Image 1 (cartoon, rainbow, N blue to C red):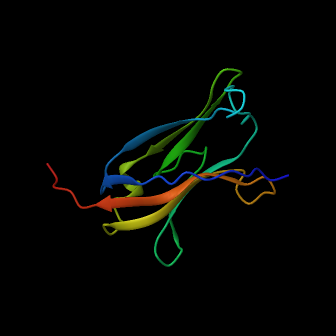
Image 2: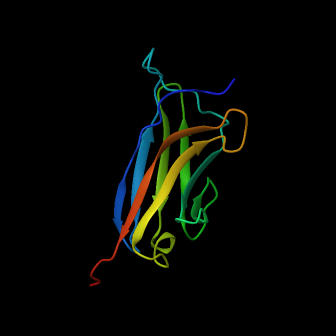
Length: 124
């Protein structure tokens, strides 16, 4: 049975070609306990206005970054590391983005959606 809930909207503003690290902690809203994420597949994706994936992160390290998953009885966490290469070739603009648990499966769940706003920045 698919999970259902309101999906939070998250806007991330970041300078072009920089690193970002974000931690997402998941709890059961009824019990307050760590949400069960053991064994889940994870994907972060950002898409341009045409729907083309311009950033894809999974638990495998790539030049764009990675997702690190911690699942214990007291902590359910996904750390998202965006490396400079993830945005260095992008045009400054807004991109749609989402963090997915079990993408493409019958239990696929979007933990957040929203906009990744990549902005031009002065370089040192």
